[in-house]
Amino acid sequence: METLRTSKVQEAHPEDPSKIGCVHPMEDVLRMDRIPHIWCPGCGIGLAVTAFSAALERANIDLDKMSIVSGIGCTGRVAGYVKLDSFHTTHGRAIAFATGIKVANPKIKVVVFSGDGDLIA
Image (tube, rainbow, N blue to C red; front, side, top):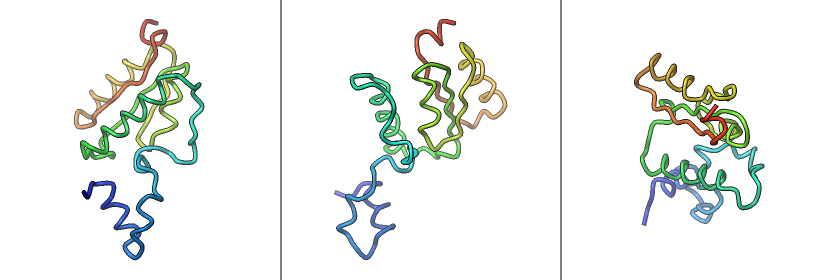
């Protein structure tokens, strides 16, 4: 079965189909120079970022019209791991920043990654 990912790899390596497994499945979304991530084993943030990246791949969302906002703490590191326009904000201000982005450009899809302490602040 050919998927979007498989076809991208075939375009990159049309001469050698054996290289299909040589490309990270989230290469279009994640900054590969930051992998492996810094989150603790058992922490759900890495899983959330993986699920988010997979959803972007499946949905074929235009990554140039996507923005990530993250606050502080462990979730604040998410902005540095994605190849999207991203903003690492001050404590408790992720939603306000995201709202400002959406007001300034309603065509952009904005996602906030934030922890409980940051959202409650």
